[in-house]
Image (cartoon, rainbow, N blue to C red):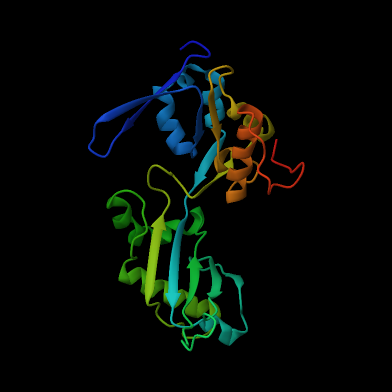
Length: 255
């Protein structure tokens, strides 16, 4: 494809028919797994350096489990917010607290939310027996966790806090290892020169009008901030866009 020529994108619509769109600029804010599957169908596949850069990051296998309770039971332990960590397979519990009642309301609602997450590669195998049926069910979307898994989580929460933790009245789980994500976040591989790869990803093939950004290709992997900073660099450096008014003057946006 000639430099400066429009890029042709083919999308599959809801009825399964392909739709082609021409664009002068294309920004791919994509995780490593999805980008690797797309690359063979683009001019990027013929660029050795891009192929090498693609392997400089790898996905982290995590799942997130949101649990809703009738009351913030952790307040009995003097905990208002934050997280608790453990070497049990749940690894961490995050306390999201309780919404205050509406002004003038007499509703004694104390419903609260907690999250179990960041179960890393060392412990993900413990949960695989529960998670595999959810992954086999299709795309990674929030689903109700199996009852046996919910009971095991409650048992471990009780051990972590030293009290009888109540059963949640609502729970939703998502396993980020499914496609197109490949994982919940990313890490740089050993020996990767991230400060060199990140700028190259902003324009892998100079003059083609194709740009790559996102959390995977940032110096703040694992956080939304990484994706925002990486995207803003593309908008300003490659698309010539002005920064938003709310952005601080001369902010650090990564290499």
